[in-house]
Image 1 (cartoon, rainbow, N blue to C red):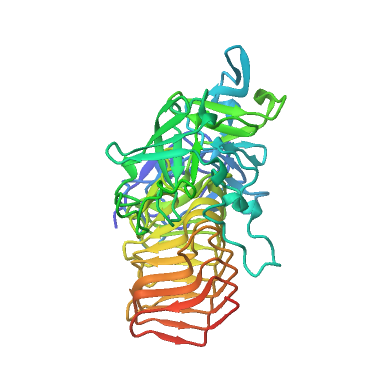
Image 2 (image 1 turned 120 degrees about the vertical axis):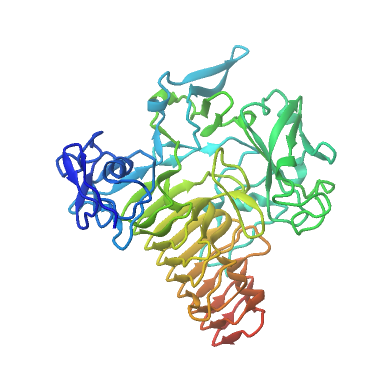
Length: 564
């Protein structure tokens, strides 16, 4: 064992300090000793004060507990904590009234010292205001109401507000690819479809409409989002690179080869769809689309935040907060760490790098990545984290890439991309969690997990996603993976090919006692690559299809499917 004594701010810290308790509070100070009367200000401060060399597995952190007082914490903690047999635990202080809340948002007034200024163009008020903000704002809130990213055309409700339609329907109607109004994120309908074209040489597209005249789409980092593939469910964003008169030009080259492989092979869906303008779907987001109340746009090029307040309102007098950070707790290359019992709004917590034995439990994550009235899309979040799914598609997501990860008793709600749990063939544990309201990707993807335990979870309400998917994940002859006692419902508002539970391959996976219902998907699906697995005592009803089991050496028994 590597031990040493060190004096930190007057406290004697020994290399092995199992059972020690330290404290953290919103009013903690720099250079604190971590006692109840002199608490640390942040997790990062505690690790810096108590830790030794980050790769020594017997520092004062190991076996110790950091007690976090109730209150609001606006901080990003990227730390490395490595412990052997005794974990480092971060948890709420006993007897604390209220929650310890990690906030990804902060008051616009605190990051825009010059305040808001009304924008006037050619002597006429535009209706929107601007503020100098050096931090990218990825969400804007007025009190408890999330505002809308500026988009064209406008819509009046979010997809999750309108779907599903209630218990009276056998299953919610899928949003038509040709008339998306029913899901709240509709794009241009047939009657008003703009002139659209692609230039295969320059790899640019153009969208032309008289309504674009007099607006500015080219500056501020806007996107054109379109469904390039005939029959495909994926909407691809491209950076706006030009705007002249009523024509907007966008670049799709950076996405080629990532989400689709070219003009003749559009992500497994066949031909490009621009020739059929009656079916082409287009949405534009950006500065030029800022034209009605409660829309905002952060122009990264200018470091300016634009906001269209309600009629007669002055944003200087409004309670506006913006999301400016992604991760309250990012445990880089950590080992044997327990993080439990916290509330997160607009931010998250995860292991990263070569992390192992990181347990995140009994916590709530609200709006880690989400924007209202948006299409499920790829590469849309400014400076957002990108992940590659098992099909090679790159998308912004709320990702946990952690070997040996365990998520237990957590609640995740309002995500742009689903949970992507990668374990580099370590064991994954995901039990008794709720994943609710996901726009893009699968709700939960397990990538390269061995012997995963996925049990007692609830997964519901996705826009263009399936539920639980194993990708390159499987069990072994001595440790089978298990997907059991999960409740999966109301999935895939607008996706052709998705499933409540899906295994594209792998072996030794036991799937049993799952309930799968009211979804525009297959209830349960084993593809050809699956083998040596058992499927039993599952119930699938009111889905597009019930159960589909392929593969060799499969045992399938005592399953029930009806009204599919």
